[in-house]
Length: 329
Image 1 (tube, one colour):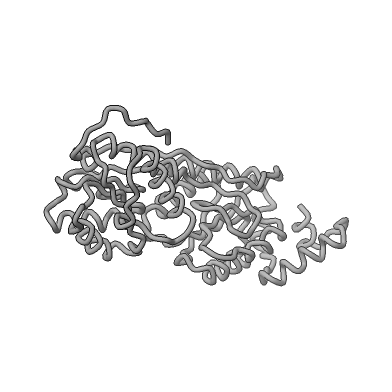
Image 2: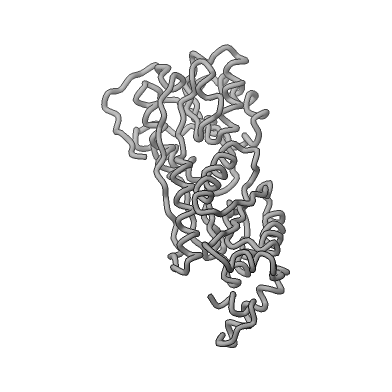
């Protein structure tokens, strides 16, 4: 690997590439770790992988990190996890810190905005992989879930249960939300349902803000009979809101991403569930292949999702239809 030869002072490196790697070393503040080098020079490969998530408290990222950790443990390797708070400046700082601490590869859920700060890491020869959303401005591969298809499947299911006025509760924070909103709109159009802008709420940034949104939606002159909640924290807030109003058995709900208490509440929450174990396995297979010197195309891999039907989505709407097209996740 070119970067390794430069770092270790070996020859036979084309001058232009040497200069690029040396500049990346300067940009990242990279320092060779002799102890780590000695440890990895003997026996089977043992890698340290950095993982930058939005927030490790988010159950999606904590469960995904555990899936990656389990897959790495089978290979005698370990995972370092850090939270960016979905801020580009914090993500850039963490990339520098993790590379300076000699991680062999980097996984990142890239915050919105410019991700050119990933380029020096790539130049240095460290495999970088984006998850949950592809990079906007850095040429690295990504693994994402089928956000659009999952949203379509959720709306198809609600329409099949007789719902026509279906609210969307989410936010405007980037790739995943945009694709889930697209899937919601595509499904409505496919079923010939009228667009109702007042049923689309893009201001649900925290769980605590959602009960008020639910209350506002249900006091409309023509209120929704079902809710599609586009994030796990949004689903939690909507559950609280419906229970506060005593309407959890009247208003259907499907959320994107599962909740720890999703099977405990009554009725249990129907969800579009991401295949976290599959994603974790594919992340590790991608990185290990590249660490072993096998190149990977800069492509986006889309992992299917599953519609998990529970009690909350089975609440019937005012109209039933037996001719609704089935969506594929």
